[in-house]
Image 1 (cartoon, rainbow, N blue to C red):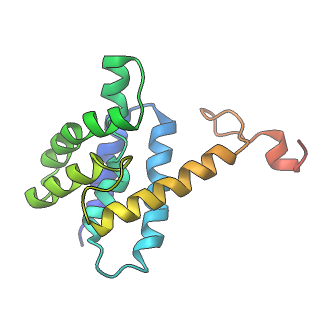
Image 2: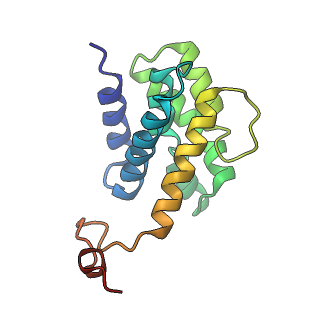
Length: 153
């Protein structure tokens, strides 16, 4: 059995350390990407797992170097980080190249015809919309807001 998802999830968690917001976001993107993959037989599952989990790794160096992040900086700083992380895990070299192209393009009009890029953009869009609409309690404790439990605003 291939443990790609487990290996790459560990890389993600080790990389983001205690940034639970980014870790949770990536896991949610993976969840939605896996649902989309069920309807897309020509999708490379290993590549999709990698890009779903690592698509936002450019946030950390962007914030460290610039003090902020946005789609453009994520696309700039993400591919070198993804290349290093994937290379350290023994991920296939050709797939590393593709993953870097996808991660470097997930906020821009598509420059590549990869089905995995299309699915990543859709999964990320879904999660971003869900996150924007959530009323949630303390994100660090995981405690839901009272309105989440009672339905009252």
